[in-house]
Amino acid sequence: MNEQMTTIQTDSIAIADTATSRHTRRRPEVLAPAGNLRSLKTAVDFGADAVYCGGKAFGMRSAPKNFTLEDFEEGARYAHKHGARVYVTCNILPHNDEVAAMREYIGQLAEVGVDALIVTDIGIMMDARRIAPKLELHVSTQAGVTNYGAANALYELGAKRVVLARELDLDAVRDIRANTPDDLDIECFVHGSMCMAFSGRCLLSNYLTGRSGNHGDCAQPCRWKYHVVEEKRPGRFFPVEENGEGTFLFNSQDMNMLGHLDDLIDAGATSLKIEGRAKSAYYVAAVTNAYKTAVDAYMVQRGFEDGQGHTLRPFADRVRRTPAGQPALLGDAARLPGDAPHVVLPQWVLDEPYKVSHREYSTGFYYPEHQVGQNTDRGGYFRDWIVVGEVISYDATTRRVTLMSRNKIEAGQEVEFLMPGREPLRMTVPAGGFLDADGHWVESVNNPAHVFSMPCPEPVTVNAAIRSRARNRTLKAE
Image (cartoon, rainbow, N blue to C red; front, side, top):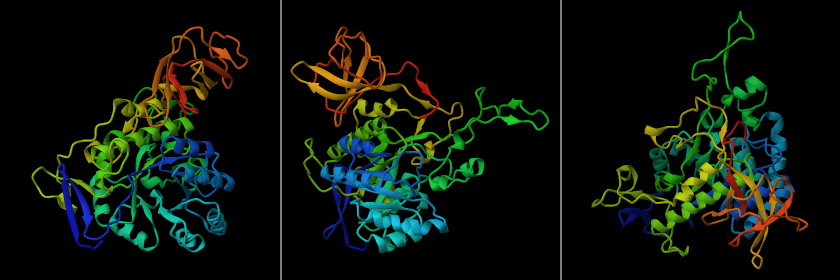
């Protein structure tokens, strides 16, 4: 951190380097969520560099099925085979009667091949250093890291990574990156649901339902619809007039930083975290694919890689935009408005977040002039697209796709095949081409969880999701 620094100016982008060998990374990490083994494998298949997931206890999401130790072992093998990593959440705020069980659990995780533990509690962090010294320690966003002093203190305690509080803006991310050791990872959320409480520390669910958000069992009462009941008129509801549909007191917008990913990477984020361990495998596939494609575009347009993914120069996580004609500088001077070109993403990539269920989007707290707000007119999700099937196989000779049905498919319907690393294949379903599992002609695909086949002019990959626009485009629950 105190090494003599030099800088390289390339295409109006300043890249920090050191006189000696500086810590560099392969590329910005796309970190995807997984609530079960299927979602983990889907995330890896669709380009995740790492996947975070939780066990049956001690994680901040109890709603998903979560992982057994055997699942972790299989998932780690699959991820490592494909060059990805697996991080396990141990980030609840434990009570006294949970400490011994958590210590035992950490010891079990050390044996199954995962790569890192995500922790919040400092006591658990110290236990993990002793019990599982080979596992990286990542400090959860629940710890509320908002400054470089805290990040450096956690680094001294053994943290390999800090997951920054979601309440920070880009200037704060820049300052933390510029004032922390090069080998401390900076992880930032880029997509998904946001909590109305600071860094997720909320007592509302526990107070109203007895389900603790700090133990992974949040009932999300902040998103419920509220009316007022007057004491002397029980049973009569009065809206607090946000609109005629009701009042949503803390109903936070979702985050979507896809179109601004270059700003966050330029600010120093080394890992880009997608929220959603309680979401479907389809959500994981679509969002991971979009962010991975965006990172690929960043690496090429910033000059780190060519179009085939070959390294042109090592990725440095301290990229700064600087004004034209001025020398490249670090620190405060790097915050001046720059003229480095904005990374341009294909429109199909920018459209992907709108093809999964979501609330109204924002860019979180990264831009003070455009901070996250609340949805005041609805508590449900937008769902413009639905999954209608999953590819089982493709026959290049007959040019037919065999699929497992999820929803109705009929002649004339517009569908898309979502596949890793490429623009979705769009197709109008032809008439007269449906066959059931026995090879009999059928008029349409109208039975969920049954095998069918239909013509498809281009090859598609196994496990590709088949989706179509939804007739009913709103949804009250995920």
